[in-house]
Image (cartoon, rainbow, N blue to C red):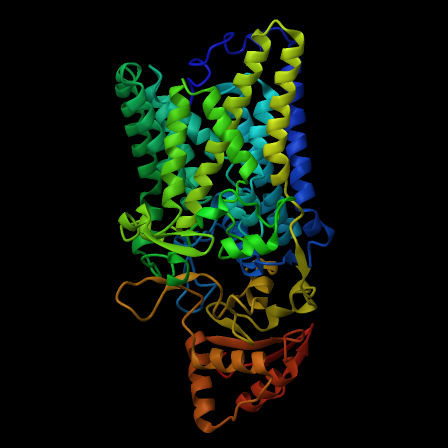
Length: 602
């Protein structure tokens, strides 16, 4: 990618920039950053209306999970608690946070905001930084290493930062929107091929890899896979040029691997062999793949999108990774035609084809219809590491590749215009180029993220009343027990800065059944959890017998329960209150918006 400009015809790279006043570069860079920030605030605007109650409409469970891990990161920064596992969630078994997306690389730096204004604010700030930072990072790389025209680089950066895939993930997955390290990883890898400074460049790459591992390992894996295919293709297409660069590249890469390996060895050991580790993502998401018809379609949150079409072509609104739209695909084909002599172009094309094909999953689907044709993912799906990959997310690798092809094509067209002596033809080429870029990107422009309101956090949390009921080594058991549906326990614990441990939770942990130790969502269901869930869903009170009370008591002992907490806003709260009275034989305290029962185990 670094030599993409040099293998095009036209004036030397940077010649146009040298003719500008010295202040133009910094001013334009600041302007670009502000534009991206403004766009990110606009997209997330509904969250900012009331951070205390607004939550993404389609993915509230991940919003709550990331609030919890951001609060955990703040506790790591403030009190130096152990970062990689916790007993504050899923008491007493705990949670392997390295085997979950604990975003320590975001949570620790954001700790001042989390501690001052709460994890809801930190989450919203990170969404803005993630979207805008990703766009700006790619703009910087494109404008300095790929194309001459900064407007073209700005458009390509906007596509990378605000692509439909990232906007869909912004509905809860703050780890996926925070891809601002990826452009620098790409540049750091390519710079390894330059002679000299191998140690410095290798260490820098190793540090970037380490940091990205604590933001999102999956993004790091996809970046590594994408770079592997791109670099391999570039070497194959440029054997003479690459021959002299391979020793420098491999030397720097070895130093990078050694640096990252030394820093990540222990955290990765905890992830794969520590307590509550597992092998492979849950079966429910293992084969979530891309419908081939999704690539030319528009996502539901794009201005040209259709909810009906998106629902037909994807498994969920937070996984619309591949919706590039037919105008962008056409623009990329035109870009390939304009730069077909460029070896960089063909390395990009192969990379896009490889990961586009892998994203189709075990069987290729076209508009919901099975073709009976196995996808190349079949060859990889059961291999170590790959068994933790959700195949549809591999299509996100295609996004920066498409942005690069669009930028290369537009930049080449503008170079042709500069070389043309006919003024009318020059204007016509520029006009058509601008129209093509706008026509490719405007239909993908994002709408605001939809939100819903949750009840305000009650005085039980905001006034610290929970302190009278929670003690070290014990848990608070929420009614119903906390999981991916009943989220108050995790939400309240996060807003209390992890002041108390809870039973259950929403996370990835090992299943208790099955030989493959594949992960499941939530904790394994216990008798009391199922009892509370049934009452909350149906409003029907189950019969309470001595056997029921005995199983209930066993569960409380297992959870090391200090108290039972029933939020007064819970669905069918009246029936749940009556049920717990029947189980405990006690009338609860009414404390700051919750009913609270002290347990005999406390």
